[in-house]
Length: 404
Image 1 (cartoon, rainbow, N blue to C red):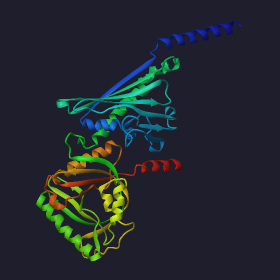
Image 2 (image 1 turned 180 degrees about the horizontal axis):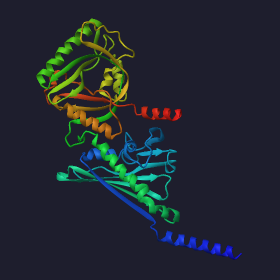
Image 3 (image 1 turned 90 degrees about the horizontal axis):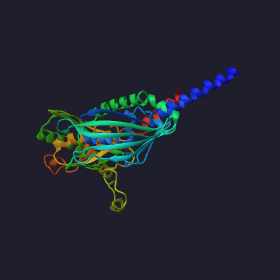
Image 4 (image 1 turned 90 degrees about the vertical axis):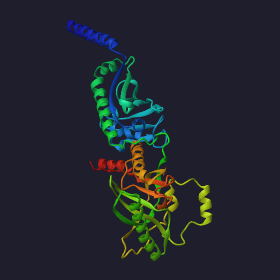
């Protein structure tokens, strides 16, 4: 009996000590890490404020696409209200959770910006949040300092207060590695500000591109000289015209140039012409109906080819017939000189990457004004760069999981 009493007294002392220590420990914790990047503020802000990009750099959530679901925010799930929900067995804290943007302050002209995430997961604590402060820094404010702040409250959760003692190792290390991944990720994005004031690149979006029939000629590696490029395009257009006449075809849209490599001295590209059988142009009534319907996702939609492939005889010519499949592409409109197209393509690619879309294949430009406008500031171009199927990664991951 005496030993039992001694045990109970010892237990009471331990419990009392636990309570005293727990009450002394902080009821909330605060962690902060920071890094610098030389990317444009626009790129940094758009990357941090897009929940689709979190899996690429955030170590505090799963990176398996099949375990993530996106909702809210603007198109592409960015900005206030955007949310990623996850469910994973890899870690207990990931069993069910979410990161949701509750505040997003875009950068003012040359100023700072901020993105705040509300966090729900299986770790101890409430009112968990991650705040990313983006501040111009360095010479001429050319760099951006990214400060990541993690806050959590434990209140009267005494066990949570004890776990808070290890927060710097449990969360702090992940926060630090996340910023390292983020800077690496940002370094892979072309450093072009696609929202700079007065930019001639407008209407950035993801477009649905229909199936098309194309006649294509490889122009080779041409000297980067407007006259040389123009002559090459016109010569190859003549070959394409011969094939169209021979096969009873007509243009189904403007000329397009498919870029292989835009070097300092040479330009490698293909000349392509969308085509259709003569007499298959949309009827007037169809055009009227189209005008009252929703606007197409991309100008190329007007050049939609009939379903199925065409039989085209290209014997004895350098022309190749290509039937493309429907796909999605980053798309923008540019007005200006042809020489600036490469910078515009890179800016569009930067926009796509910051919004969580990986580009694939070669980019192409629809020359609305034809080759005669290439040296004019009034040249009109629609830029396209195919993106990878956003569902492909999730489907592949799901298949891999089923095989295990």
